[in-house]
Length: 178
Image (cartoon, rainbow, N blue to C red; front, side, top):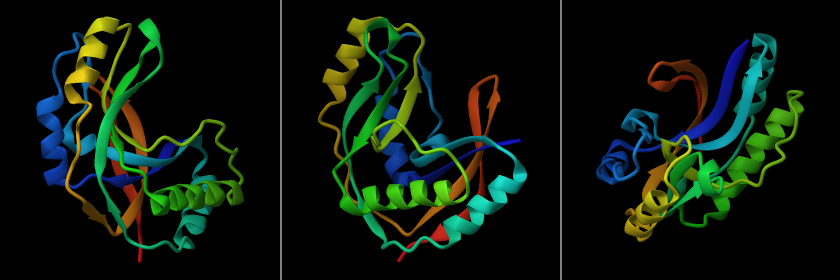
């Protein structure tokens, strides 16, 4: 079994601008810059044969290059069940199209459809039973986040595994855009 997801990597210069925002929530597990990405489709644990089928389907995706901008911040979960804080993205029709194309490719490879609404984001930290006022203060302090546009000319298929410091990722395949 291999745990997979598809994503757009965040350029180093954009990731470097996120690092100074990683403070202010006690117990937060802040993500390293090299872990910053925009998930297109979470796959989960699959057999290697299914992963090969998925790779073949992803190779057939045709989509334009993207100009993306980070915009705003948010969180997943409510109250003491908040489990992540993130940087959002400015609305981008082409990014949503690419995420849908990844979803369709996964379905053609025999994977189950995603039930959650797609929320493009870059996870900055994972939380476990945080102090809600700290999260609210962090959101307020960072809600005007806005990056310069950055060009995306590829997306990738990544494997994921757990380490003592959180999840680690490895690029398994890349797919050009444009």
